[in-house]
Image (cartoon, rainbow, N blue to C red; front, side, top):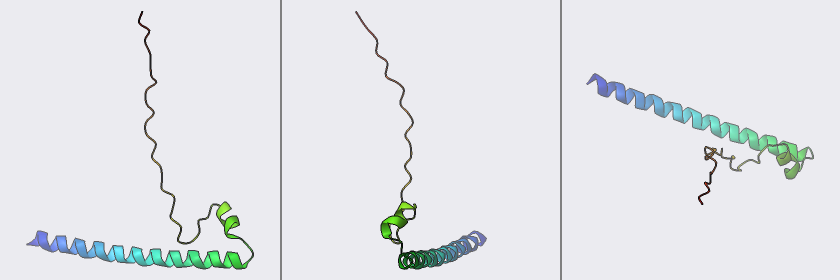
Length: 80
């Protein structure tokens, strides 16, 4: 019985943590949008802002590419 109680407590804590993170993410997105709009009003263009490395609000984040291990160099044998 104690294992079941502990399991549901863990679920509740994880759900609460996820909810808090989602609220934080929404607030960060709103801040990003307001800052982007303020920069546009200050005379920056979308292109100029993107050239700084900042992404536009709502734009997908760049996905990290994982490098494949380098393959061994091909060797050729000469047979005569």
